[in-house]
Image (tube, rainbow, N blue to C red; front, side, top):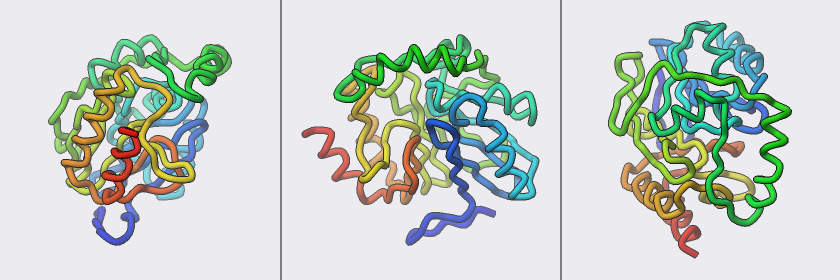
Amino acid sequence: MCAMFYTSPPSCVHRIRAGLGEAYLIENDAGLFLVDTGSPYCERIILRRMRALGRDDLRLIFITHAHLDHYGSAAALRRITGAPIAIHPADADAITQGETVLGETRGRGRLLSYLYPWLEHYLRPEPTPPDLLVNDGDTLAPFGLSATVWHTPGHTAGSCSLMVREHLAFVGDLLSDGRQPHPQRYFASDWKALRDSLVRLQSLRPTWIYAGHGRRPIHGAMLGTIITALAD
């Protein structure tokens, strides 16, 4: 069972570096649950971690948003494991078409936006029709995980965060953790909505936050400073 600790991240969450992004396996007695899948062709990396855990019972693949570095290996993992794929309806068309919609760019995001068409051509993300559309407030309890879906748009229209047992937040690209934790600052479908989503995340009072990019979880106490940085 996944034990929750306030002073250190729980051992039931397994971070996996999967190409350009992070994937997270959540382990409990009911099975494994995958949040994001990284880039295309990273399914073997995730399967290796599952084997290392001695588990082959992947129950659900939850995609935080439809960018290729987050859903890229979802279709392959579904074929291999049989686990269904869940995403918010607003991002369903993009993942179904195998597309990445960047929205408005800022800073380094302008340069990266020129590289993305080449990246899509090279990686060729597989079109991935989802099995399950999840909306704000939906629970994953029927799959065996005490978790709630929260719609946190801004980076994409359908960006969602997953709150596990009201303590752990998996937020996709709402936040990143490079040298220091910081809000999304390169791509957004709606920059105001992104800030509002951060404020909403803060109101949920997570203890640990798992971002789509970064080597370590972010403590929830840092959210105030992160939101202030976005305002600046």
